[in-house]
Length: 478
Image 1: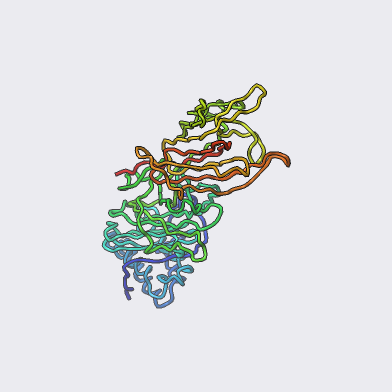
Image 2: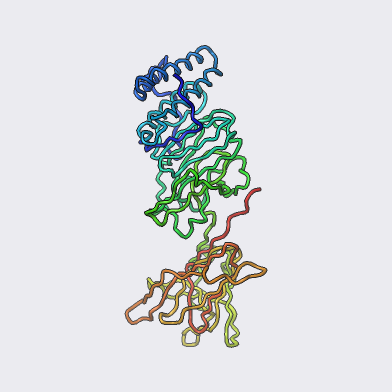
């Protein structure tokens, strides 16, 4: 009996076992003795009697061709056998039983593969949870997804020149730090982390659509505010993909729709989002990255490092001290005052009551050692920013401090107020009888760019701290 063929594979399962970050280590066939008695035993354990005789007979035909020196015939019969094994009606092709059958099936296929192709790396047999194994044929489209539908790949017809076994599995390495992951990059990486492998290894002829879902919750899940800008990335290939962006050791892929085969939305979780997908010609680690690179400024050191730590107990001109970080500061006084620069000041006006450096109005120190602040507007100018956030502190009870922002030159059009948010408002005081201050986080976002932000304190004295600047990614390779 010859089992019917199906146009593509869809198998997935929860698997036990582990491997290193680079994927399972290729091995020789497991306990295979001539004439491969262990493989026969695996077939007997995996298949009922009616199917067992057919699979064993076809496998023995493969090994007979190998022993006769007919590699071409052996390979053809092997791929025909694998296709039927992966598409048995009412068996491994159904999700309800795939979770219990994929592990022994992957071992069996891997052991057979190692016999037919002894000089090639064999497919893995010990897979992490949520894995999938599938076969891609030269003239057929194929879609392979994991059981959760959180990772998968869709191949157009003509993607491969030879029959190709594809394995997808969750990366078992624990990346327990924020922004950590398997890719070689300083950009922030977010789970889920998957690895896609193919056997034998060849660059695809036509780009496949790879897709991975973001984790909906957990300490390492991407924040809701950045989910829409996440992009799928993978290990940088030797030959870049068309339309991709190379950053350090990764390739950020041109986005494609993968909603036809991945399911990331969770009706019970408002934080779930659509699956990011990317078009690639290569297999490797795949996961989500934030393509925008944040630059954090705490104002405790100048960009030159600790040796240039500011003292600034007295007025400190802040005009260009952070230009290399992408921001310069001005101060526009009101009432005809002559001072025209923002100042850096060290004081204890923060929730912890500790000495910290903050951007302030221009000020001077009088003969008695007191501060004389000048009324006006602090102006921050940015060389390359799409998102800017900072802490704004002022005396509690003072009027709301106006924030105005402007887009890129030459127009430098005003950025709508809807793109300027105020969050995390708190009040604090260093002691029971000290001045009560108000703190809030200001965030300005504009995808086309931000050229300047004006903090119009006027007669209200304001302080800025902990600024984060997000720059756009490098231009794509065309």
